Structure formats: C-alpha cells, structure tokens
Image (cartoon, rainbow, N blue to C red):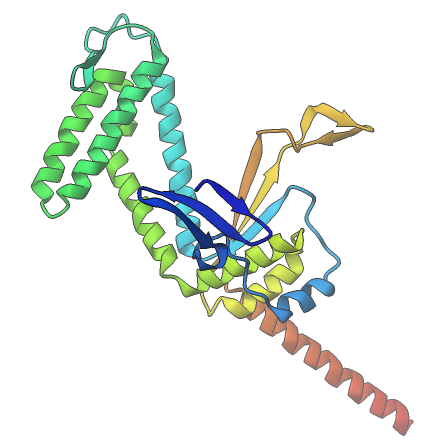
Length: 283
C-alpha cells in the first residue's frame, strides 16, 4: 500500500505489474465502521456513568477469557526465556547450541543473541508441529529434541518452556472458537460502538450485552492504565504516557437473568403502586 486518500476513500496499491486502486469499503477487516444500533444510542443516552479517560472495557464469552489467560501465560514464559537468556552461563559447560545452520551461540553473557536463538527454536517447533500434525510420533520426537536444545541453550531452569508448543496450540484453538462464536462477534460490535462513541458507559454496555449473550456465561474485561507519577498537571497525575497498565478480569455469569429479575421487580413495584392508589381512592 503506497497511500490512502481520505476524500475518495481509495487505497493506492503497488502490484508487480502496475498500480491499482482499492476502495476502502471493499476491504473486509476491522477498519470497517461498526454496525449502527438504535438500542445502543438509547441506552447510552440514559446512562450517566462513564469510565475514566483511557480506560477500556469489554464483555466476552468463555473463549475470549481463555484466550486472555493463555496469552498471559505465553507472555510470562517469554519473559522467563528472556531472563534466562540474560543470565551469565559461563559456569555451565552445557550452554552451547546451534540455533540455525552455520550460526552458534556460545558461552557468555550475550543475552540478545541467546534470546533470538531461542525464538528461532520456538518458531521451528511450531512450524514442524503444523506440518506433522497427522503423526503423533513425529510430534513427540520433535518436542523431545526441542526440550533438549532449550535445556542446552538456557540451562536447567528452562523447564517451564518445554510445553510451549502445546500452549500455542491451545491459543490457536481458542482463536478459531472466537471466530465461530456468534455471541462473541455481537459483543465485539457492541464494544466497537462504544469505542466509536468516544467513551464507555458500563451500565448501558451491560444492559445491551444481556440481550446479546444468548444464555452464555459472560466475562468482563477492563483495561486500566496506571497514572505516571512523574507527569503531573495541576496536581493530578497523567497516565497517557505510562506503559504500566492492569487488565482486570471478572466472571459475571448469565447476566440476562439479572435484567429479567430487574424487569420483574419493576413490574411488581408498579402493581403495588396501582393497588396503593386504588386503596387511596376508596378511602
């Protein structure tokens, strides 16, 4: 893609045989605007609550929750690999391995090269597992060789990295489930509508999600940036330039039952008010 003209909404694309132009509305991806909904606008208009600036919320099904948790485990293990790579292994004679043909990472404290060598091993493992997915014996053999190489590269403390192939396989499985989950796709559109409106209103978000969940258990996710104490403006902290953040996860269950109970409670209150007004008229 060479350029994009907002006035005409066309992309200019360079191809091997020449230049082409593509209308943005013909690109099916997340750049398309969210589906409009009058219910979203009505619920947002009646909701006075609002998340602080920079905070983001989302509601999703179990497959989205599992994806976030597995992704958290993946990041934790990659951090372990980086920490072990930066560790001084000069006293360990086993730490030496060929990451690629013709290249060797030897004893020493060269953390960046050692970490890149580990990533090469991990990418090769995932590619070999995908190619030989039909044969379980080949998968077991490749996993054993990967474990031996990682132990030689990072030492005996890398035992948690031995099952990275299984972790990535579970991540891919949950990604496929997310793509086939109609309830989750509707909740993603709800998230995009609130994001396009410029703010997230939690009560309106939850009320509309109750109509979309279709009886499934719902999990809430809220992203909260941590204010940077070094940047203060008029005595308040500014978290816009801070890289620290928190992702809060909470199990909500079947929230449409709460909405129905609320409707039943309001109907009972209206009936009680009617009976009370009738008694007043009789008196």
